[in-house]
Amino acid sequence: MRIQLQLPDTFSFQTDIPVRITDINYGNHLGNDAILSMMHEARVQFLQNLGYTELEMEGAGLIMSDTAIIYKGEGFYGDILTVKVTAVDLTKYGFDLMYLFINQHGKEIAHAKTGMLCFNYATRKLMALPEKAAEKLKNGRENS
Image 1 (cartoon, rainbow, N blue to C red):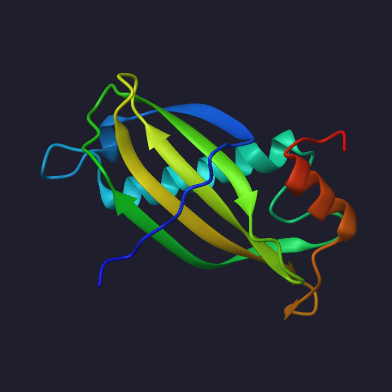
Image 2 (image 1 turned 30 degrees about the vertical axis):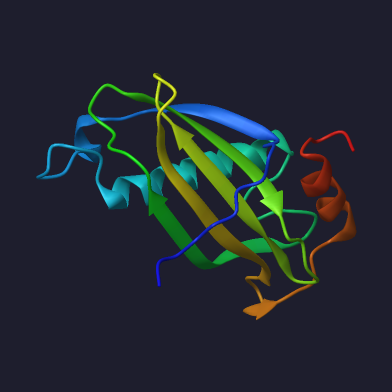
C-alpha cells in the first residue's frame, strides 16, 4: 500500500526556494534528498515567522519523529518552488507539519509531512508542547 497524505485546504505560511544545480540528481531532475533539505529550510522559515527556532519554542526544542514525501512531479534546475507549510494534528507532545511544493507553473511537485516532537535537549527527554506555542501554531502567526 502506498503512503497517502491528506493535505489541509489552507496553509498558514509559504516561501519560495530555488532549485540549485546541487539539487539535481543523475536523472537530471530534483533529487529526493533535496526535497527533504528544502522541507528543513521551509520549516526553519515557518518557525522564524512565528518567532521560534528549532531549539527554542517557548522553552522546548524540536526533534523530528518521522517524515513522508509523496512525489507528484519533476523539479528541474532553475525552477522556483513555492513551499506552503502549516501545522496540523497538535498533540500533548508535538504536531505535524504539512508541506505542499508547487513550481512556478503551478504544477505540484511534492506533498510532504514531518512529525515534530517537543524535546528537552538538556535532559534528552520528550516534553509537553507549550500552550503559547500551540496557540501560535494553530493561528499560524506570531502575534496570537
